[in-house]
Image 1 (cartoon, protein in one colour):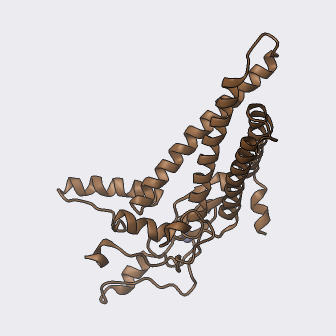
Image 2: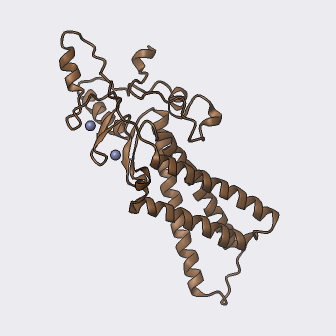
Image 3: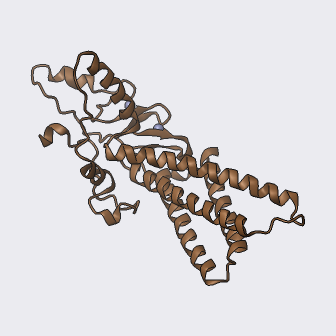
Length: 271
Ligand SMILES: [Zn+2]
Ligand SMILES: [Zn+2]
């Protein structure tokens, strides 16, 4: 049952945090700053609700979408015919006993192989892989923008409020706590999004980043250069991951560009 994926503390935690940030931003800070019945208030209410809905929708998609399973008919491409069988055997997963396409990794939490596995994410109770990477990226991007938006509304409300002696200290404490939460959340999400923008521009997964560091170190020892084989140019990399149409990059359901996930263009194909 896919719905069971939501029955995890981290997933319920993310949902509660989203609900809390949405409620306080709209019904406390925006209401106090501009008022919900004024035109600027309504406009801000509309935009913030739109961003929050997009975050929630992409979050649901990244939780529910299968990150990518290996097709049962998959057999690896082997370069040399003499020791083809040997080469193929080396591409087998020693836990699932099936063949592993390039960029596939075995996830110990999901107990299966995942196509173009990025990492296992506790917060979505799912692996981030070939099929749900776009939904995951759109989620963190929308969540980052929503969090920055909430911070701006919060600060605007704080600046216009008259902080006299009449204001209860519990209310002051609430403002301090909310400010800490929302600023911390914004910094965390900004760093995470920045990291994934870097990975997308280089057509790399988190696992490949660390593997690449090791490969670079080993290559340097023998005086060679290592280049990530799937990095075929920033714009091409983006289109392979987010799709060929720029207008649909932020639409988490526009995934018709994704194929089986067992073949990826490399530097060698392009040269
Ligand atoms: Zn496996
Ligand atoms: Zn996993």
